[in-house]
Image (spheres, rainbow, N blue to C red):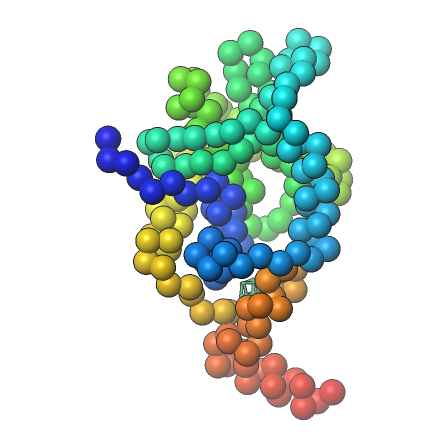
Length: 203
Ligand code: SF4
């Protein structure tokens, strides 16, 4: 088997949110916190403590290290529920469901790792949304699996090529902790720069 350069599972989520953010973090090593990332870290604090416990006959594995040689992935699962020989990954998120598929792809990549590590089939996982205190089922159907493979390849190509994509000012930038470093108003595409400049003249 060809040895693949490992891709962090969390980088898939970053890439789907914004390829430039993924490159700033994973190519240029830049990080900055905002209220969203701090809340996210606090939420993960408990899930980040490695260990296990048994609840009502279900074993909960916390902060389980993950690896897939087949797909060249490394990462960690917040929680993996083990029901007999069935493995179910659960990812904790601070907010409500987002309109992008980034959480689903991240969870599916965890499923790829679990399938390889435990020689099993992982059919379903959950995203726990702290804002609503509800968990949402994610089914690892062929569409999601193909999309996840596509994103893994795209992130690997981004890291291999070593080129940080240009900024593109979009609504998502409002919630991005790297906005101060990225400065999409200045470095983004010309049309948006003109729009922002024109708006600034009106205030
Ligand atoms: S500020 Fe916008 S363009 Fe820049 S990294 Fe964040 S999301 Fe991407």
